View 1 (spheres, rainbow, N blue to C red):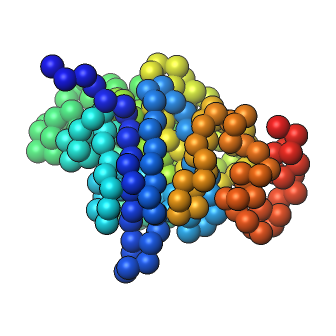
View 2 (view 1 turned 90 degrees about the horizontal axis):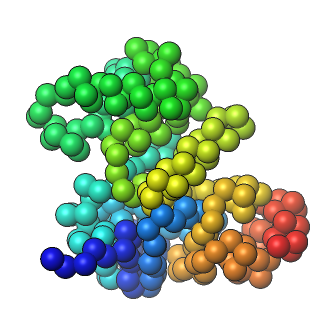
Length: 254
């Protein structure tokens, strides 16, 4: 029996859209139990990296491995929360239906969902404080409520690795704190999480590992190693000052 590889391994990854490079020569190794924040300016390739690991985008060069396997095989071990903007919120499904979608990986799309799955869905909705909304159409919820439902769906998948594309976008401060608390509990249970994040001010508090990305990997490592003014300046360039003076001061104080 071959030894199990790292949860995520990326080697010399290059991805282009219409011959325009979006990611170039990215190398990355994510250890089990990591809570990783992915930071970078708009267009840096953050979502592209997530989608390539998910096998939703084919790379032009390099490769991705999930626990030592090709993405096609390892994808069953990954839970995914997409960007809010990529979801059709008018699709006629209830909150409970959305969470139950996370159980199909355990059975297959043509298999019948059983009582055990329904119990698990209810448990996950309760964990994100959304059980009272189980029978409501997903499109009738606020942005923050919708994100909590997608987190419940990810929990229902019972995956080993979770990739999340801006899960805190459009949520209120209370919801964000609730969600990061759940992510930390997932990490404590041995899960590996990669989270695309846009807020520099909270990144230092939320994550224990940071990936700075701007087409290339600028830096990856622990927060004290990576969250420095020099590396943030290298990642964001002139945009750093525009993002917020506070984020710059936080970085200088680290």
